[in-house]
Length: 81
Image (tube, rainbow, N blue to C red; front, top):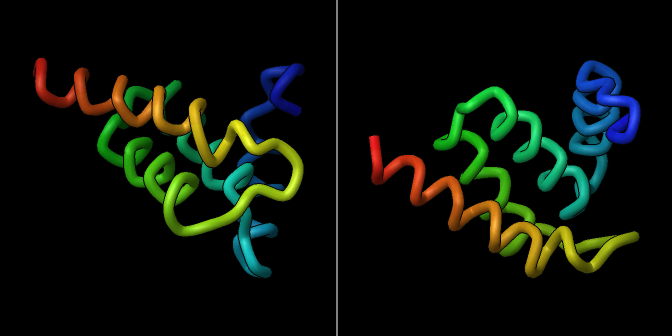
């Protein structure tokens, strides 16, 4: 869904995953959704959750460097408003 740019399918999949245990991949994807929609405060929350509140199940980068980099981007954008 990410490769196709299908944000509706991504959102549906993420919400279903959050009903169970959740994962850093899900939180990261939600962060990406909000980042792409320029809602940087909401995106930062989901990147934080990816780093500190969940664990990765497929891709360790979603809970480490990718999430940290995006979180920092959100912070810069919010401070520069």
